[in-house]
Length: 418
Image 1 (cartoon, rainbow, N blue to C red):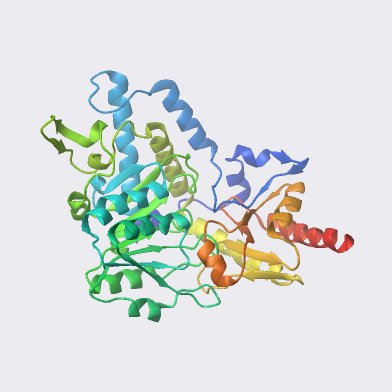
Image 2: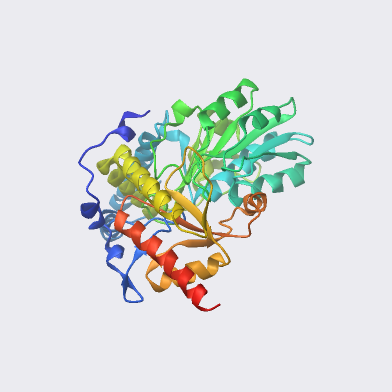
């Protein structure tokens, strides 16, 4: 593991951490906000908010090629943020870090830049039933265009991938694997190191969707040996509109650009355009400068707390919430993988998840309801939707108790209406 992401720098005191998040002082329906929708988007600490304000107030200009003070300052800060990301996930070089608008664009960049260049008719792409739509639809688009074939790794009833079935999918036509590190719906942590090693044994590159992993654990892309790793800033305390694609330099250099224009060029003429070096080859136009700097500040914040400490606290919340919700009659937790992050999807008997979420909101409790952009997974589970509580470093055991009490109150409302 990368040393910088595995250190704990200070005692973990959740009450102190909560003071850094001004939105947690909000009241919803005259009740204190209990924010349990972190898998969709986490909240932003004051340190990140202030860094964004400082940038916009004192440092803002367009980057690259400008010779004046503000442009040079903004360029420096932007590239400093790239370096922070590189160290955070232990990439070998800063040029392997590409700024995008989010995890979805990162995956689409690989589909267009690598897939459209190297995938041919009859080639096979391996996905899993746990994937978010953003790691399904781009590959379906590619398969339709190229005449390629999608193969899907199944799961058991606990929500764990069947690795034997994964291995059976490989054959000489297998050309690419795209898998999630962590399931956004179930919290399942997939054995991606083992999966990557097996794929590489067949000379097949692997993209990992790390949107749900990076906020909750140390990630070392060199240790994993993944070829691509994608994630978003807004799920780890950073701004929206910023994402990361890590790619091995040799693969990025071989890929074709996803977008044209702006700083992705070296020389342009009507006869021919020469593309810039990586990472700039994939960063056409004005990039999300402020958001990238904000992401860098979010990384600083996480490292100050310590990824090990965050993971330990969230695991304790997961164990406590699982035990308490399991005690409730008529409530079923969906996804019982042995290795999970702090995400609990659940269904309440005879009550639609949207009704559960609506009534919990009356008590200021924010959960996510629906199919969570994983409709194939819901179909496998025989469900149309679930309610999902997802925890972060600033959540407390008292908030878990409030969630449990809220679920009981929902049941009582429906019992009284029958």
